[in-house]
Amino acid sequence: MYEKTVCFSGHRPEKLPNGGDENSIAISQLKSLLYKEIYDSITAGYTEFITGLARGIDNWAAEMIIDFKNKNSDIRLICVKPYTGYGDNWRGYDKWALSHIIEKADEVVTICPEFEKSCMKQRNEYMVDHSSKLIAVVSNYRSGTGQTIRYAQKKGINVMTIEV
Image 1 (cartoon, rainbow, N blue to C red):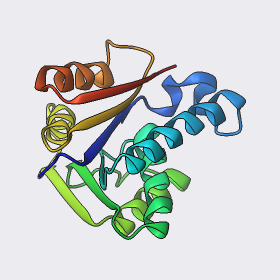
Image 2: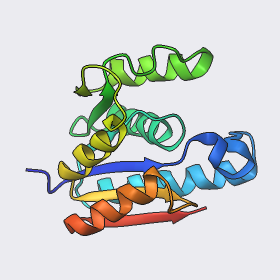
Image 3: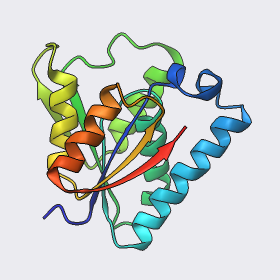
């Protein structure tokens, strides 16, 4: 059931090169690598993509999936919210992007009814448990992304890492 499903993990923008500045060459290159991994996954027959809706990698990947969905009706986007009010306090572009991604999603799953300490980890494990491939952008393995990579490896799913 999940054999053609990819999930994503990666750092928040402030933990990426140049603070995640989307106008920087480093982030443009990073986004190109992410796009290529998604394209290659679609070419290999993957049709479902799961995002955890975190600022940065997750939402950049989700926006790319939305573009692919416009060209290929077989592509599905699944959003996994760690808790019900996730993103309610976001402002500006981040808030708009989150609502746009959720609006374009084929399915939205909410892990916890309200914030609790473990809800982000539970979200990450849910994504891995429902996927056969993880695309991760990582610079620090002592992070939620590193934890997700280790969990995916333990579960035996294909892990593609983009090191930054």
